[in-house]
Image 1 (cartoon, rainbow, N blue to C red):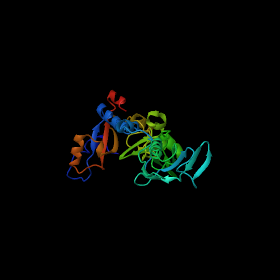
Image 2 (image 1 turned 30 degrees about the vertical axis):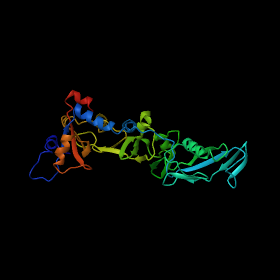
Image 3 (image 1 turned 180 degrees about the vertical axis):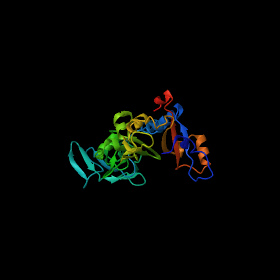
Image 4 (image 1 turned 90 degrees about the vertical axis):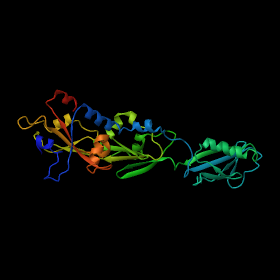
Length: 322
């Protein structure tokens, strides 16, 4: 790998090279706090607080299938025929065929016509039907049930099995979606859970989701939950005990743990001032000033900036930053 001096000079322009510049950052307390805030921004619990959305609302929407039953006290004035059933206590029951709510958000009820049901609860629709029949039928009563919930569901994706899970009054959470798809057959340390809500996407290690109940948030209609097998690794190079690629859990690894995995620094070859971490940082994660600087170099949203973090292990406080 490059030497200490070569890394420090890597972001200086030279006339005889076409290599891209790098963003060299000394690891200090401010940098660590910024990295921590970036990691916190991926927490699922931020969805509920920032967007103010709850779970299943229990309302009827376009595409739902409704089952409507109407009772009329004897003598029955309006309802009878094929869909009627006598002997229901002292009332006369009419079971209407199941209907799907059309694009206009309506269904049809005999002797009433088309009624608007989209955005209403089954209880509100019942009252609406009874109110419309009160002057036509003999003491009518109605029962409305969502027979098939097709409008309020979430998509759950994993390798080999994907489903659309209807939401209910139980207010299903992320782990309910994971269970509905059969869990994961992969090594739990390698699994990342990604939640897409609207135009926002956040990812979290499956281990972290299980360990922190506050991240197991209530799902809402339209959410997409994906279980991804993403084994992470880093490559140790230079004056360390082991120069090789090393795996680590999807919940992350500290720099101190990484140095330990590499077998530590070699005393007679390493420069403790020159411990470097190379990675690509999304352009949008840079602060405003850095974005302006790198925009002048041709970078923009959707691009990654080559970044090198420098740690000086001769400074005692640096051990608390790892």
